[in-house]
Length: 287
Length: 287
Image (cartoon, rainbow over all chains, first blue to last red; front, side, top):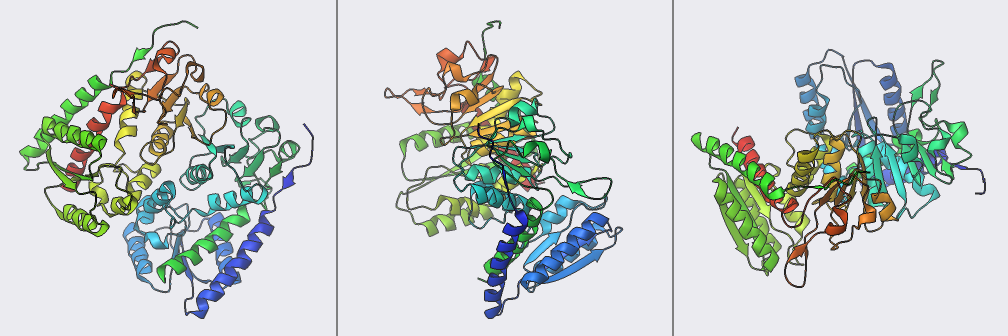
């Protein structure tokens, strides 16, 4: 086994390229009188959510997408949010609706997501969009983070046929759609999670290892096959406020053929793909 | 390794038990004036489809479900079938609509499935139902064959937590929903397929091995871990007209802890689950 240094996948740079291309798409839409619009709904005042929402709004501005930020108090009732979503569903200036998660405990998040017009569901969380993704429909709205993670994998290897991809995590936001995307690329796909046994030996089989577990540094060097592509989706906050991933980066780098850093890997891609979904929604709705 | 004989999972008997319970549900519905109704659409005259449809109709009769069989000529146009589905969607005496597959080549099957009212989609193939299954919605309509296969697995082991399940096949009819059902049971789940590498070594890791590949006898003894539960979804027709599964049954039986035969394993469960879905649809629609 030669010990070539791993390619550090530069999510920031790849995201910037995508954003440039989106800016072009937005300009094209505007020449035919369509200004893509994204509505972001934030319930309550979670500080992390606040930062995420601000970043999303700023990203919209940077590519010329119209954005509207709606901040609702933590005490808002379900039916008030319902009515609000109905209004945005009908609003012709809005093509994408994003409900920032998590919500306060009294809110039924699933009911709100189900209420969003699937054509405007830029997070891809409506069951209709999940079902379209699984069945390979060309107009599926694909959740942003797995969509971005796939692009990062494809930046180092275009043909994934026959590779064994292991996804750690099975959330509807990430793990499940990620597995579907890799399956569509003809990977053998394993989904593992907190109830899985013997994770190190399992993960050591992966040609592509995608970690989305929310445990800082959980994936150690001996979990990683020599030459594997390692995608770190974790965003874990250290006591000092900096963030770190699910992969024990320093020890894993010498084994991987390619790896995403945290920060600067998957994170920037999520926002780029949100912009891409918003533009795609505007294109489809106004087609 | 002790060599206890494998449990032969009797799908016929388990299906009969389910059908008995369904007959009770149907009787309960009828006392409040609801007669569950299933419409089966068959386009063209594929002989195998003809047999399947006849079996389904007969099964409906046996539990007191009203059934209506619609045979359309192989030359029927897409728009004629569209109009036909619209009629059935609106028909209050029909709670389940089943489009027998495969269709003639000129028919856009996906468009027809997408047209079926999801509440009446007893095959569970509409994207909304697939998405509901993936996101764990309690009212998901679950495709019949994987639903039946899971019941067979649970007939020999109720708690599947942490077991490694490997599903061979990734169709929307079976492999994909099967993987989701096993994931919901807390299995580690691998989906493998025709592009997967080194299937024997991969499959030999499975605690639960589910084969749906459509190749007679492909799964050999050395693909099977000692003590594994083996579920054979294959229905391959021999030259003499009899059917055989995807598993090399004779050689695998001594290694498995439990195995389904073909015929008499998964097959009878598919029809039982179709009846169950029809009753569930009638219950939900008339609730």
